[in-house]
Image: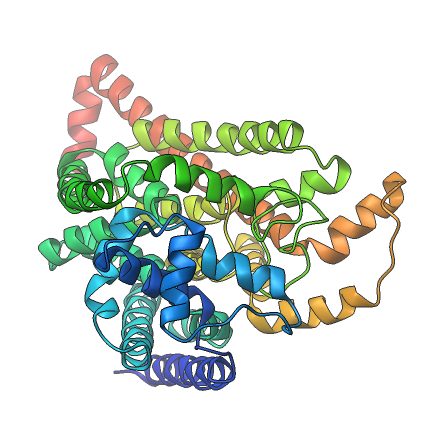
Length: 458
């Protein structure tokens, strides 16, 4: 192992150690432990006790049986109450968490945190392993920067830490053609828990064709095999669970809800803020009938260009990592995501390292874009931003105030948009150059076969 690889690996280990220590230290002060883990733990336990987890009163009854009390004196009672009593997890998530729900809460939390840290470190190492081929210190710096800002993953116990990690492990397995069965299982578990985190990564392998399409279809089959018994289980306990889940999702997404995109929502100015592009458009017009279509239109255009390029070009390792680097930030923008979901951006490190190794001016753009995206979606900077936002009193009545609000208080979606556009430009440009060279080669072979044969012989 070269000195550069040693330094990169040491930096990575040190940074995730900081996140685990700090995040769990803060989580121990929260009554009952990490909120998001409590939500899935008690939701699954509710099912095990043959109650409807999507019904607030039934779920709250299970909480109270475990010693939980309503947060009347909490600094943020509405957010805490909605987090723990409005179950928005899919039935398949509750099925996979069932083994944890059979254990005491304290024991289940420790195992969950160890599992999250282990899978996240594995995914980061695999992405660094690819990036270190081109730029080991740079890859270690970028991944270390992100890993040092994972406190919220361990503070909340959210499933995103495991979901995005499994998605990255699956991508490595597929592209390296190693441990393929493990990769299929990882992708399936990722899809079955949070399809909006790993769905577009899965779509790339479907569009890539060949053996990669086969891996995508295998993952989809395993996903269905996991989801079907979960749906049957929940349906037997709560026949109307789909209506209850829809209601819970609606309540959390309305203005003032924990997942709302508008400025009045609880999620507007907190550490784990919503990163989707809707939060930017909502500053100008807080109307979901406006900011949702605008977001889908812009992200849909980028997805269409990305899909066409993926279908047109022949497969290559370099092209695959560029395609994944493009889709990772778009995933964050198109629908509801928070800062812990943004750990999926580790998937962009191999592409950044390749561009850095190629030299030229573009290497500095790649480094700047990646560094800015990792910083502006990280836990420490978002904490500082949240503290500063409390003292800012910007009127959004005029366009100037709206622009100031977007730049000063919504920088994460803006840098994710810039990252998406940059990597999409690099990816489509490479695809166009490849298609042009292939066309020139075919024309040369058809019009001048003797010249082409001579060139090939040479």
